[in-house]
Length: 83
Image (cartoon, rainbow, N blue to C red; front, side, top):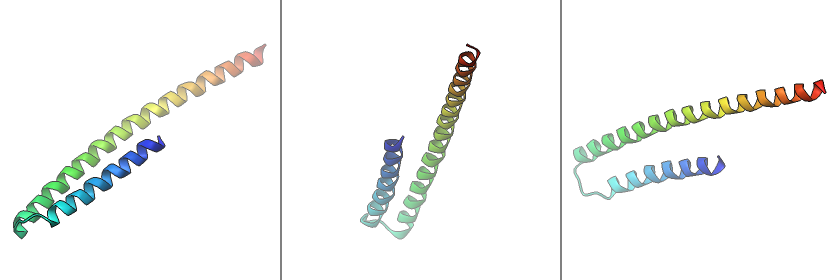
């Protein structure tokens, strides 16, 4: 999980700085540059929304698995206590 978080941070920062550098060094008019920045911002927003949904789904799966494991542990404890 720690490596996944690091991967996300590096990916987000790389995308952010890569976009800025690409736009700053491009030989385009201000209007074209603003249009490109707007398009890139929309792409980043869409990726962030998709990532948020994915993280939400995965965290729900982890929660459900943890609850299932906890119930199994409780049952095993009850069985041992009866003996």
